Image (tube, rainbow, N blue to C red; front, side, top):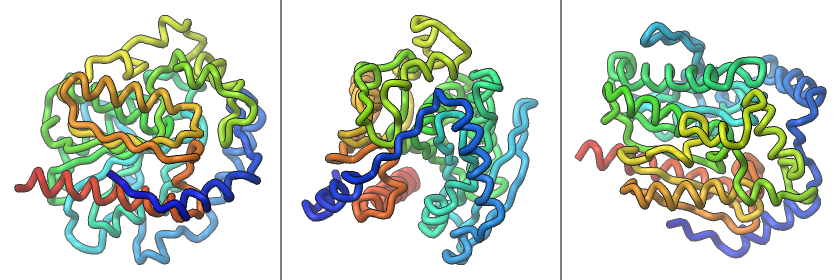
Length: 316
């Protein structure tokens, strides 16, 4: 477990106290604008430069499906492979926006494969999962040939955490090379797309995500499916059979409207025999680990050490 000093909790409280930014994914014009503003990352210097790293773009194909990925290699032979699935409400962000976090993973000795999945809702929701399944299946089947190591970990935040679990369940069903998946690191994911109680109760004061729009957004992002249809295990991992998944580390803040998703998934994982650790970060909102505060650095470092531990255990 992680020990967070009181001073870092107070710093986090003070940092977010005066922040009023709330992203309303229901506003289509706002999503359009954010997508274009995020495009500036392609013309600015990547934070990878300061870390002495670089990235390459590739297309990987398995089982007749192809997806584009962004690859960051460590400067030494890798200890393992991390498949990163970025967040952004299934509608914004690209792998390049994870360069800072993924660069730190590469500095820790991992080859990182970040998935450039298709956006919803302009693409069918199952197609978004297809892309993530393709990248994971490729890493499991071809990672050793490409990177010289066979152990794979999944790392996702928010929508990416949801897609990580969905992709892992798909690959578990196929059975091929699934034993090479050694762990899941899941930051503040959404695992019930019919909306958990904390999502439905979210208010206007919810930070980063605009609470009142969340439940309606989950309906829109899945093409208008009913609540019952969105509880299908293929869409909402909380209702799936989770037995046989590798060890999982779940991380969420007490101010996150998705807190029930993480606590409920952790309970179900444990009940079905999956080695599970749940970190609940005091007074932290959604996406807290991307902000310039000490608690973010501490939690991100803890997740990297957890991943290293999974590789060490599998190698012994």
